[in-house]
Amino acid sequence: MATAELESQQRVAALYSDHHGWLFGWLRKKLGCAHNAADVAHDTFVRIIASRDVMFGVQEPRAYLTTAAKHLLANRARRQLIEQAYLEELAHAANQVDGYPSPEQIYAAMQALEQISDALQGLAVKPRQAFLLHYLDDLTQSEVAASLGVSTRMVQKYLAQALLHCHLAAEGLGQ
Figure 1: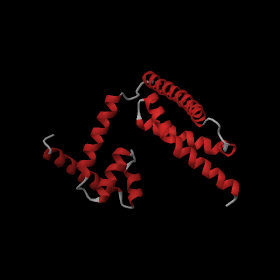
Figure 2 (figure 1 turned 135 degrees about the horizontal axis):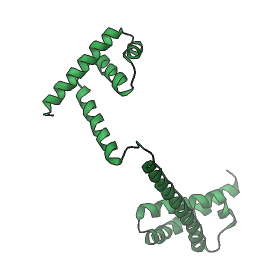
Figure 3 (figure 1 turned 180 degrees about the vertical axis):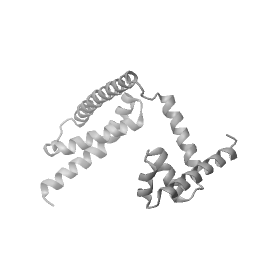
Figure 4 (figure 1 turned 120 degrees about the horizontal axis):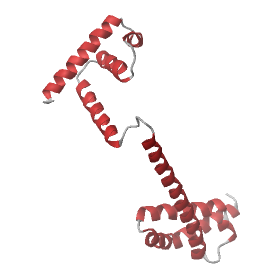
C-alpha cells in the first residue's frame, strides 16, 4: 500500500474515532432521533472520504464536520419536501380519477384476497391454479386449459371443485 494512501486512511480513522461520537450527539440533539442522527453522521463521513479532503488535513475538524452535516441535512430536507409534494400530488390525482379505489376499498380487497387464499390452502395444485388463472388473472377456460396442459372439460371440473372447496371453507368459518 502506498504511503499516501496509508496516511489518508490513518487520518480518516483518527477523524472518525476522535469526532464521530461528538457529531452523532450534535445531530441527535438537532434531529431528535438517534436513527436519523446515525444515518447523517455516517453519510457525513462517507462524503468526507469520497471527497478526499482528509488527505489535505482539516484544521478545525468539528467545524468541518458540522458544515458537511448541515449540507447533508439541507439536501435531506429538500428531498423530503419533494417526496411529500409528490405523494400529495399522487393522492390528489387518485381522487380525481373515476374508479380509483379508496384506501377502504383497497383494504377490503386485500381482506377478500386473504380469505380466498386461506380457503384455497387445502385444495390440490391444479384446481387452485385453474381458479387463480380464471378468476384472478381473468383467463378464459380455454386459456386456462392451454396453460395447465389439460382439456377445457377438466378445467370446468377444477373450477367446480375449487368453488365447492371455497364454499365449504366459508361455511366452516361461519361466513
